[in-house]
Length: 146
Image 1: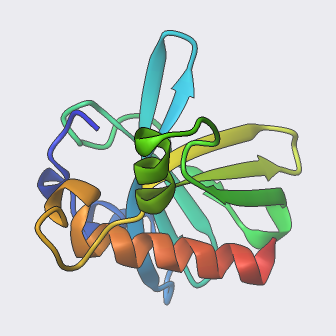
Image 2 (image 1 turned 180 degrees about the vertical axis):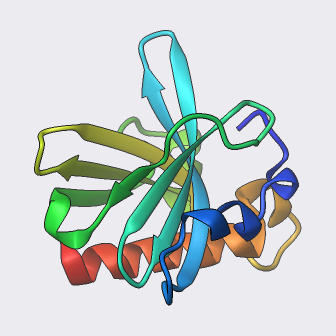
């Protein structure tokens, strides 16, 4: 990602939360499209997923996408970016996941995310503890609702 994750915080999700809704974590992901990538902050609450588009500077930009469990048609996850062999593929497999989300209205999103890390010399470059907590919250949400 080309922005500093420290610019963004959970405070960006607070105006989007419903009364009594709890944010369990948030993480960042890239949605690649032809010739460009969109950056999203993915908030995981006790009720839904919130996909918040971000600018390249890490600031909210555009309308958030809200997905409640009943609006989620299917979801899948896999380690890494999905292909190749060799050292680069092994590193991607160990440090990242790809998440596919399809809503019942037919819209599809494929997000590539770092798994995050709370310790180690490269933890900051993998998104740090907030990314790790957000990815774990996303995995738990999808395991329960998809």
